[in-house]
Image 1 (cartoon, protein in one colour):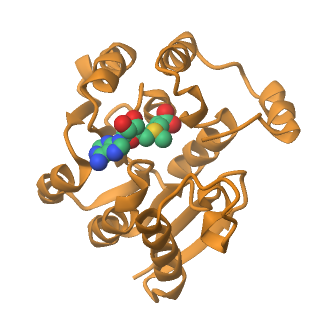
Image 2: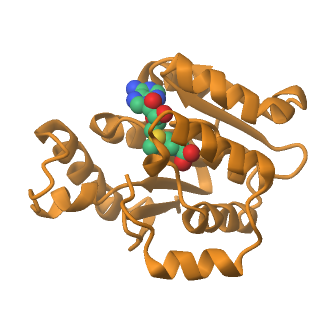
Image 3: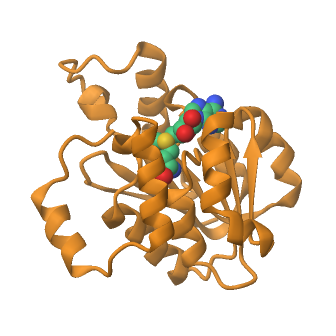
Length: 218
Ligand SMILES: C[S@@+](CC[C@H](N)C(=O)[O-])C[C@H]1O[C@@H](n2cnc3c(N)ncnc32)[C@H](O)[C@@H]1O
């Protein structure tokens, strides 16, 4: 849901290595769908990858695959025996993501799960606990995803949540009117829970969209 890329991001992204051909392909597919603006930025994806390496993450769950761009960044940060389960409800998005993530799927490092994430997450619980969980799906379901993540992350693992500002709607900025009451309420409650839980150490990176990081401490 980015508008123009901030100048600081442009500067940082010039310093970083260019995205791989497959990452560029994932962006091209998102553009083709008219959804390029909701793909993660290289700056934010690299920050998540950096944290994954710091905690030696091996088992990761992602909610919201789109065309597989953030999944590629996550997979790049995992060891060769790491694994990513990525959940997506749109068959059209899954078909494109399968092309982007084909090599990792063949190498048995990644599985794309088609369906509503709230339902599919329940089926994944038996494979946990997980080292990291990245939430980037349906905003109205953020609180449910977060509660599932809290219950299925290992101690020392990290929950990442993107778009927690909802373009300012969480602090009452209604100018864009992009989000409804259910979405705003879910994200506000999740944000409060992240900071009131004694079992989580939480921080918000003030990116344009707001990136929440919660480390499970007990
Ligand atoms: C912001 S995009 C994800 C972007 C992706 N993580 C990236 O940065 O490349 C959100 C995705 O969540 C998917 N989605 C929305 N509601 C969902 C649901 N109920 N279950 C699973 N996926 C859902 C959308 O179809 C969309 O592809």
